[in-house]
Image 1 (tube, one colour):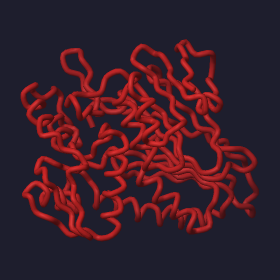
Image 2: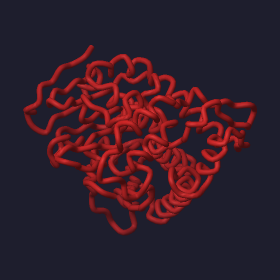
Image 3: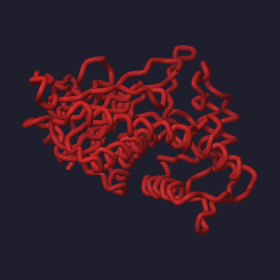
Length: 344
């Protein structure tokens, strides 16, 4: 992957020593899926049980990767081929459910989160493991924007999926991590595990606690490599951050990041990072992307429409916009240089 990849969130795990006969304080294992490292931390279970749980999650992740990968042969490629040729394709129930969820999230975000712009993402070179080192031409961007593909262009008839717009190309990279952590947490719960974190490259969902203490999550400073603040989790929560520093390339001294505004066809401007807390990873992932694209002027409207009330947005000038509910939970590591504006 060209450009630097930074982890927007980090999990601070203080593991206590335990006797060999006791369950470990925190069992930790690392997987590599979706082009990123996935850290799984399980509290208070035997090593055998925790290892078996991670093995089950790994199988889920690998199946999901093959099914929904945006630019490799697989199920999503078959779906996109059918949509591009104006044909319908038969889905299985789980596929229909996932695509409908993505559609609802897109509609609620006023299509700022828009999985239908795969052609535009591809034009910028982000539908590959090695993306472009230069931006596409203005005319090629404008041409794709003119087609205005959205998730509203999809039609469902029982398990049949089709589109009235042949320029729809689905790319679920914007919610892949959210979907993954939800699958993993649901699997852990089904196995009787109630205290854990699944951290996909900095975006995560946590359940329960770390012994007698809540899980403590660090939020990375968008302009530095050190943490800006931390949050203590409360039960079952997803914490996701979108940032313009995660994946990008530089051309003629200008940086182009991977979060594309579907309205303009260019990387979103205005915000540099958005952190969201809510009840599930799918919503948190989509909302963080949509709110970053919405920027300082529109994020409150989109957050309200998506049902999100815990948001921290940092604009490109370094001003922090934060909801009152979020402000009560964020603990800054030191007195921030940034200007903080609390939003009721």
